[in-house]
Amino acid sequence: MKISFAEPSLPKSGALVLGVPGGNKLGIVAKEVDKATDGALTRALKHSSFEGKAKQLLDVVAPAGLALSRIVLVGLGKEDLSEKEQADMGGRVFAHLAGVSEKTASVAVDFGGKDQRGMATQIAFGAQLRSYQFAKYRTKKRPLKKHSLSALTISVKGAATARRAFGALSKVADGVFFTRDLVSEPPNKLYPATFAREVRKLTSLGVKVEVLGEKQMAKLRMGSLLGVGLGSRRESQLVVMQWNGGPKTRKPIAFVGKGVTFDTGGISLKPPAGMGDMKWDMGGAGTVSGLMKAIAGRKSKANVIGIIGLVENMPDGNAQRPGDIVTSMSGQTIEVLNTDAEGRLVLADALWYCQDRFKPRFMVDLATLTGAIIVGLGHEFAGMFSNDDTLSERLSAAGETTGEKVWRMPIADAYDKMLNSDIADMKNIGGRDAGASVAAQFLQRFTNKVPWAHLDIAGMAWSNKTDDTVPKGGTGYGVRLLDRLIKDHYER
Ligand code: BES
Ligand code: MN
Ligand code: ZN
View 1 (cartoon, helix red, strand yellow):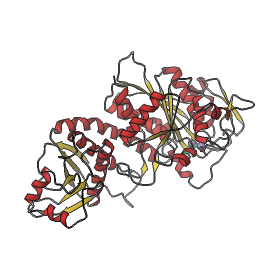
View 2 (cartoon, rainbow, N blue to C red):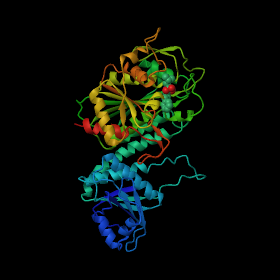
View 3 (tube, rainbow, N blue to C red):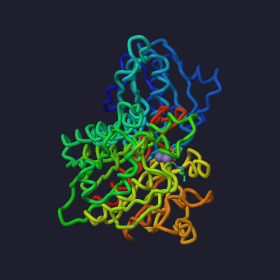
View 4 (tube, helix red, strand yellow):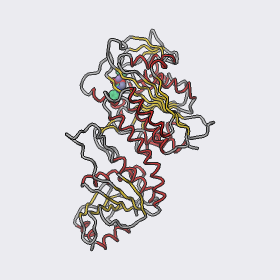
């Protein structure tokens, strides 16, 4: 779908979308259109229950007097919408137009309160995000019907400003789509080496990409990460991405992702029901990769490190056993009592490596880490655990603006104690209680006191229902959130 911006003028064909702030008051363009159609809008309003409430839609098909296929009135509910509400509206408009097989459409933005250009930009962003499809594995036998909409024009006064702002946001959407693609891929196609190969392609955007194999990781003594991959025929990989958009002297910020390309649980095998979901156990790594694509695409002025630990967790004659003790890169030993608590083992070495090599201002890790966080927060918030209030507050704020929300959860010494082992420095599981906090506590032992936040995205990486800007499937959660965090605080 091609998205463009233009100065206000009435389209000659296709669909025209108009916003109604509420109370059935028509805007300037709407009044003009009403006149040109001999009152078609006034009549349609009179005979419908549409009142301009948020999320209401009124479709006036083929009005006389104009060569348009339809006029769609969209309820806004109020004048001033938040960015998220604006993008959501864009997503809903896209879905409606695609649903009625419209090919070209124009949204006339003469609403949106103080900042109509911002409104136009977000509508475009939302429409683009909603248009995502993962069609790769649908063959001619059962092809996925492609969206009909090929051109969407947003008309607004001062279109150039909106066009420029959207230029950057469409790069963010590219990043989100990259994450969704990675998360959607099946585990026989996407495994550590092929994942690394996809990430290497970011080189063309100016991202520096290094891929470490098992030999190199063994040299670095990453016994914790490597233990997880022992049962797999696929070689584990650690991918290091660097984007240097800021001055050389500025310390980088860092993002670390769990990339378990398939999690069977290992010898502590998971039950069969729902195991297929564990193809998206690389969601954290997917988000970090998408984030790097987004910030490189929009040429962010920040210095950003992305590190992803890629492993496949399989049972096998060579697999790690419950009871094994591994030595992590930090030198700390870990008694692996449950091979299904593998994400923390991967992140332990990735986090340690990150702070050791890059001395970042902070680290944020993302991981589909625990089922417990889904019990606690469902699919509305990612769980956030942090040793730093400033970082937490900034993440919460970015979550509110983008709609990719986080909720801070506790870490505490009492949870940390649950990890003490009789014969090693720690165990990789606590008891049944507070599973998400205990997991966070485990990670904290590998942060070396660097400001850090852990986002448990187990409930967020995948969705079984379509949302305004997120079709069901891989969500790309976190790319918008972290792009916003960087944009608001780390580009100066
Ligand atoms: N990848 C899972 C967590 C998960 C569960 C993600 C459901 C998404 C949906 C993780 O590796 C895991 O197995 N965690 C265990 C930890 C337990 C053994 C301490 C869990 O949550 O049950
Ligand atoms: Mn697991
Ligand atoms: Zn896992």
